[in-house]
Length: 319
Image 1 (cartoon, rainbow, N blue to C red):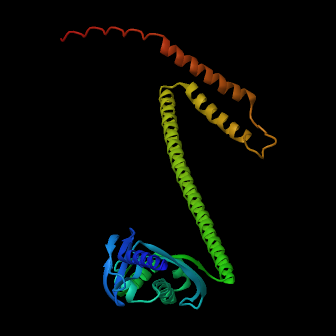
Image 2: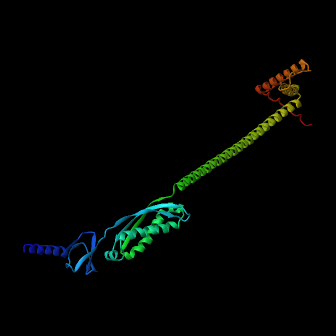
Image 3: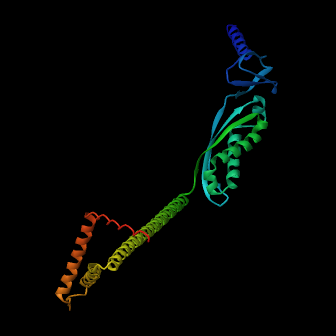
């Protein structure tokens, strides 16, 4: 008889436990009546009829992350790579997630792995390594559409690592090295080309400036010869005037000048070792004396004033 009260207390405690349900934040529980789903319990305090109603599944409504295990994938160009990743998802409908698919997490992982093989199988190895964002977007679109009937929302899929075989990595490294050496050779050749162009431009400018200098020098030389010819013509005119006036010293000056120029030309000759002068010394001295007398007369004429003109005699008266 002492056991009966204990049995009654135990039944009351179990009944209260089955009657009162408190759902924590971030979870939703499904309620079943005689094994059939009826409704979903949200976070908070709830009462259930013992024996008649019970909790079916306790679903986590927070965003969850799953690791996608590594697997071998064959690309479009028959390269075998190892790929792994992670997937983020969130349960939006607890009833669908509980009753539309068994083993929800396993189903999501296998679905992601299958679609990774499908997406990478349509890409070359270079595209698989370089188009990571496009691959993630394609996987997210396909997996999210496939899991929608399960009451899930796939928020993100990321490929963590894509590992080609070791020999393929070595081949890619050699290819990259050859490509860099090629670019370096191209840049070096371009540098030589630019240097040759600049050198040719410099030589061109040098030739142009030299031609301009020669042109200017020729112009100055022609101008000097023109002035020299003018001076010589003027001197010849002065000598001619002096000769016309009967000044014999002008003739001596002109002959002596030409004579001295001829001697200078003969003396400046590089092959001339000995000079014979079959001339009389008195003739040369006379010419020099004539030059000195001519210079003296010219200076005297410039310094002395001209005498006044003599007055004319008056004209005879007419008869």
